[in-house]
Image (cartoon, rainbow, N blue to C red; front, side, top):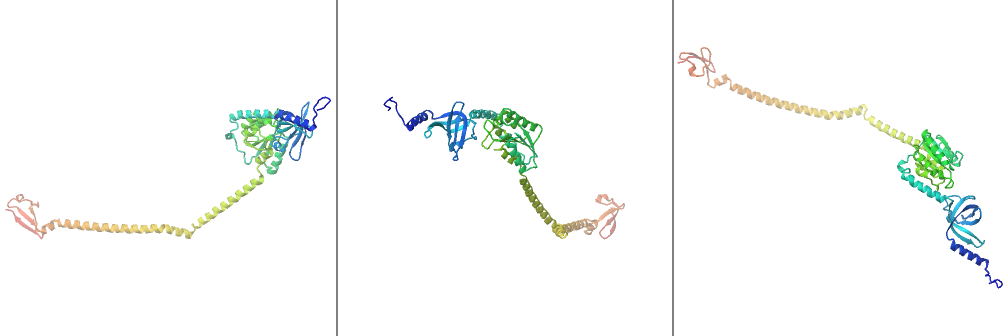
Length: 398
């Protein structure tokens, strides 16, 4: 205690500790908006910079573990919203914010707006997998909707020339950032469809902040992509970037370069496939020819004779057997017929008048030659002729 004015005296460390305790206690969690300046990452991956506005500035640190989760690349002049806690860096006697999470200012509002729009468009079925169209294996022409001066179109063209220069390319230039960008991109997608300008469309741009990529989450662009008859590959930003165009497109590529790799089938790959198919076809044809030749050998004169004999011999044997059976049946039938004829003949002979008369019978006729069957038929004194087996006797009835 100072004896002259009774004022407490602290060491620098003591007063700094008290200030630190007050700040730590009262600001355990804060969100601060400001512009990044004096951005200086170190070799260990930690980020050091200053947050400032028109009237003040604040030191900031973001350690490596937290910095790895950033969705954008911090740089001087970027307006951000930083979340963390205030603390005092005693060695320099200044307070700072220890940042645990950081986004571009307004990014949270943008994300909420995009999420609401996503739910509404999804409810209409614009993101349904059933709407997705296949990407052609070997397109004749590829359309590219992007900035004609950006890095994205240069990357796509370089990859196209390297992989397959035979595929045609139509660039449909469009502003890809700013208020007019969504209208420009949607209009070029519809133009490509109206005139059938290509077989597949690449729609996208290079990386940027969430706000820079916002046109590709615009409802106009989403509806144009969903309504496209031409298959669409969305290629917006970097791999970590997502837009609503990615959900509406038939295929999402993580980058414009990846989209080019997907769409421009490598010429050498196609040639290898054709060569492989040719080899398979040639081998198959050779196999069929070999099989045909083996089958044809079975149709030379000697083989045909052997095969014909093998077919005719059983038939001839069956014919011979049938002939023998028929002849035997005819012989049996003839014998039966002869026996029946002989029997009939004997029966007829036994029933003939001569045979009957040999057994002692006679035929009596009157003078007119009429056969006398009853005694009353012959009047007394009638001349009769009696025929016997061995002759005729004349007589007169009484």
